Amino acid sequence: MRFREVQIVSEDTRNPDRHFQLKAWHVAVAIIVLLLGAAMLWFVVHRNDTQRRLQALRAAGYPTSFAELAQYTKLPEGVDNGAEVYISALAAYVPPVDEANMPVLGKAPWPARGTPLPGAMAQAISKCLAANQPCLSLLREAAGIEHCRYDHDYTQTVPLPVERKNCAQLLSVAALYHAYQGETDATMTCIRDGLRISDSLRREPALIGHLMRISFIRMTLEGLERSLSLATFTDRQLKDLDEMLTRTAGTLDLRQAMITERCSLIEMCQNPWRFAGPGSGLPFRKIPGLTDVCLADTLEYMEKRIEVCALPPTERLQPLRQIDHDIQRLSFLHLLTKILTPALTRVAELDLRRQAHVDMTRAALALERYRLATAQVPEQLAELVPQYLERVPLDPFDGQPIRYRRTNPGYLLYSIDTDGQDNGGRERDMVKKGEPYDLCFIVTR
Image (cartoon, rainbow, N blue to C red):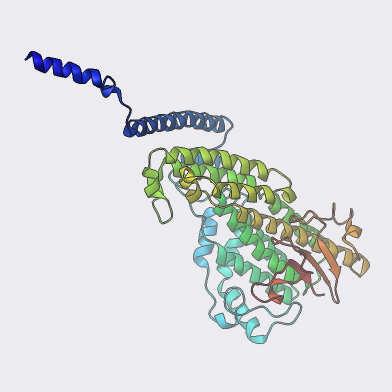
């Protein structure tokens, strides 16, 4: 027994550090524990910061949930609501019978600007408009109602705006058909009603409503553009058209669309079960901490975008492109941000195209007023200032004056468009697929 004790003591003496030897796995475990602790601390700090930012947004009156969005977009008390009339108009729409000879609503292209309608096309349009008189009458009634908001459950999700594409197209065709007939009062009514369809989406939240508004304005202005090559409007009519267009353009605010889009993204981070469709990134939301990172990113990057949208239009595009680029360069930790956050550069480009289109249309209306007064169009747009235009409009894509030149007959206005290149006023229909073109407004009269 004594020998055994001596042996143990001897062994301990030879290996005094046996119980304290540092192993590799000790280091690995320590590193993992430290990383997990640092990650937890980072998430806690950022979660607290995120909650403070959300509270600040609420205090400033901005929506951060669908319930708050419902209040943010509600109608004033006691006003008439045009939504039901628009829904009735949609229900009354009748598709064209002769699609082969029907432009816009069918498969036929419009004839060249200023040329007569082919007989078969004129007949197809006439029959379509006759069948749609109830729809057109309801659209006219709805246009006279100032406010509109659809009865969605805004407390649960951002609704898709009610589809009104067919009605907007119908009005564009009707405007141009009346211009062919020399019926300028009827053309003006259709232009007004088309712009009011866009106005009716003012309270539709998020970017989808804004993009639909842009689309309806484009359809309406394309009808007006071709109408100016066909009919001579009075000075009073041209002034009224300019006032209608200015009024509608003044209600379009990309910054407000971004504010309501931010609300939708906040909900997507906080309540992922509502957004389980394709591309929703739902499996990744189960990874602890990723939703917190995504929410923090959403608040940071959407705030930057909202600030950029308050800049003059000519200064917006490059900063927004940089923000999208910065998001795509984020690490794996920000994977949900990359999946859920839309690339908003394209939205900004479409908004700038809309502004250029509106500015060119207003310049064309001023040119027509000048033509009425002098029997010719000016050599430069500066001759329209200040009697017909408050200033020469700037191209939102490069800050230079909108391009203008007289043609024989008529004139050409154009913006260099999203590629930033001056292509000499080449219209999209003039070039092959893939070739560069400009955003043009052409009058051939």
